[in-house]
Amino acid sequence: MLRSIATLAFAFFAAAAVALIGRPVLRTAIVAAWNDPASLPALSIDPRIHHEAAARPCAERIADLLPKAMAQIESAHSRPFSKSPRIGVYASYRTYARANGLGDAGIAGVSRAGWALLSPTLCEDEHDRLAGVLTHELSHLHFFGWRSRNAARPPPWFTEGLAVAASGGGGAEGVDDDEARLALRADIRVILDEAAWTDFSAIRFTREPACVAPCDLWTYRQRLAFRQAGLFISWMRARNPEKFTLLLRRLEQGEIFDGAFDEIFGETPKRLWRFFIDDVARVQPASHLPE
Image: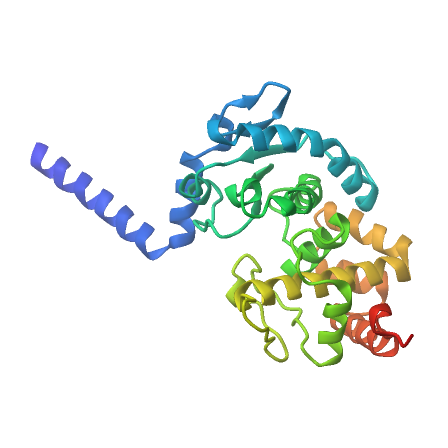
């Protein structure tokens, strides 16, 4: 009898192990659950911020940045946060990768389950990106904080573009608006599809971008895509701010993206994108205007 129970238990755990190996998304989600940022010490001056011990100086800097960043996002999204954001700050790339739900230490910031998790690189080599990436991730927390967890997610190009526009370019540093417009004119255009933009290799373009060393092509194409999506979001908002705000409110209520978008704007996203491209083609970037 005991042998039978042991055999069944072994079979169960073996099957679970096989399932985890075969489903990396499930595996990283379980690992992330075991590395809950809530278990990190809270910063005494702002308990919304949790940090690894070695990341305390960076956490204190974030405490200084947070009020302005939150105000910027509330203004851009036209309403307050539904709940106070929480921030996880890491000194260890390994721990950050395990906690962020992606298993990838190369992504500067991730929003997950009401938390903005920030990579050690923002406290070190890329410290100049800290304010922008923090504000970018707060945009995600704001938007998804109003939605039911079971609501269908809008396409990543919309949520990433919204975060770039709302943060003033956070997440797209190194590619400015003029460079993104020049790429659009050259038919190097991000494709608005359902691809998960957390997987930068899944982001597609009509023509592949190129950059000259020491530019890192992997980073460049991701930031170019984010910047172009952000320009599109800013263009839609400027064209009709009332309709854009209505779209946000209806998406926050959990409505399906395509249906809400088509009804509010009277156009599909791809058709409106075409109008946006036509506008870009007519207006030359300021930095390239003749003297």
